[in-house]
Length: 100
Image 1 (cartoon, rainbow, N blue to C red):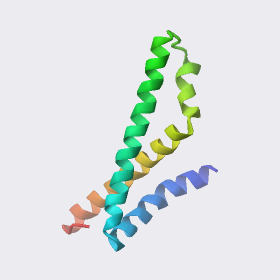
Image 2 (image 1 turned 120 degrees about the vertical axis):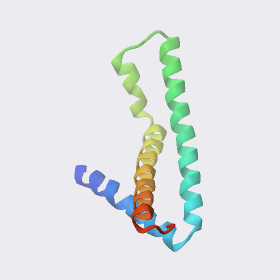
Image 3 (image 1 turned 90 degrees about the vertical axis):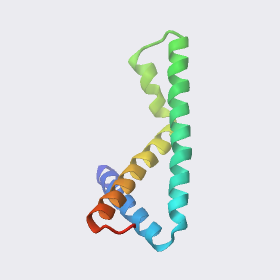
Image 4 (image 1 turned 90 degrees about the horizontal axis):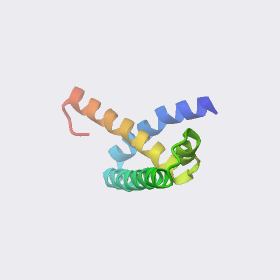
């Protein structure tokens, strides 16, 4: 499982890069998905923290229960992959001088 996670974090941004290079509309799709993911991720985090503070239950187990939310995990992982994709684009654009 660890190998799959590491390989996926390397391969997925590269696949995203080549998809957006082949079909320019993928840039919009990837950006829109990142915006939606950031909204969902941030709202889940803020609502969970607000509920913990409101209930005065600041325990590590309560705080870490947020990691059991599948939407939090999915959106967080997409944001991580998206950041790697954007860094790949920026790096290649700066080194080649061509808008990719």
